[in-house]
Amino acid sequence: MVFHIISAVPALLESPLSHSILQRARNKGLLDIKIYDLHDYGVGSQKQIDDYQFGGGAGMVMMVEPLYNCIQDIFSKYGKMKVMYVTPDGQTYKQQLANEWSMEESFIIICGHYKGIDQRVRDHLVDIEVSIGDFVLSGGELAALILVDSIARLIPGVLNDASSALTDSFQDNLLAPPVYTRPANFKEWKVPEVLLSGHDAKISAWRENKALESTQSRRPDLLND
Ligand code: ADE
Image 1: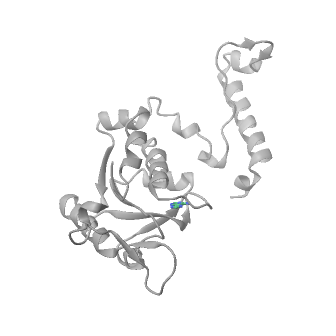
Image 2 (image 1 turned 90 degrees about the vertical axis):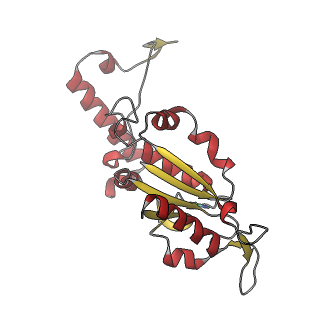
């Protein structure tokens, strides 16, 4: 899977994409991430990417032309693909969307800054607008990283244990059950006996029950979905 990420501050993206699971996925050739500095597509000798908004008001707006040129450049090299814009007024991101999008071959993600991007980019070039929650970040980069991380870990082969992603919280609309590791007894804080029993059916039943209990008490809304 290939993510083409367009950013005015590409340095913000580098470290999280270059460690741990994502870096291993890149090394294995399961994930490719191409980062585009919007300034390279800026207008005029100043390589301008933003300007004052028409009608007045605080905050700069990212211009249509650099974004258009960058997207066309990607299309001409790699073919057409879905264009996502991360924005607080997009549809709210959920695990189900991560599952769905993990089956795509490639995406362009536009990271906004300042007051956002010229509406004409949204009207004519963007296919999907997504928000990672009801709060406002200083820029779209952190949101883009969240999308890439949560989608990439679902690509077959990215996690060592293929079943691991299926038992995450939110798969099946349930939160994940508690987990324990050695030692089995730490200062008399004991691991539940059933997990030490070696009885697979009982362990599964215990986990299902705990997942349900936890969802009922912390996120009952998920059970109504
Ligand atoms: N950019 C700024 N805030 C955002 C949010 N909540 N979700 C996605 N992109 C954003």
